[in-house]
Length: 226
Image (cartoon, rainbow, N blue to C red; front, side, top):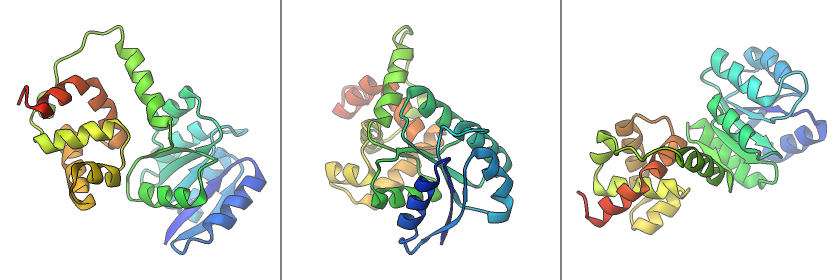
């Protein structure tokens, strides 16, 4: 059973989420909080596995609360669920330890899937969020010369480079498996190997790195530089 804490300043939102997620047999809503400060005061008592966190809240917002939770309760996963997809909120939340960023129009079934994935340590980003991150990164690189690919990236196998290139486009494991005609389990193994060999925390970091060296990946996969 995955224990979930709901943090949102709107009681109707909390009630709606509790009702919908409570229908999932493997999810248990252990508590609610109307701001980040309140969430921190009940964390020890409730011991949640995943915190579903809003961003804009009074007293302590979701970004500050996420930072404090990751410091004091590093084992707890934070999944941001908000109506705001502003670049600064997305970047700040992820930099402060959030494992995912979804918008409140996410269907309840997809939200439940995201909670399960985050609980296992996977990063979950809503549609359009990964593109925002990539655009931010591309803009930051416009005024910099392209560095050579790191040695550990060059040491990836051709198949691992294919998987990494597809991660950069935002494809899920299932989508990658379909495109490469391999099993989803094989994709998961490749992703694990990629993260370990490149010393990366999650798929988001992998996607950002891959976008820095897309030309190299394309050429390498095509056999121009192996």
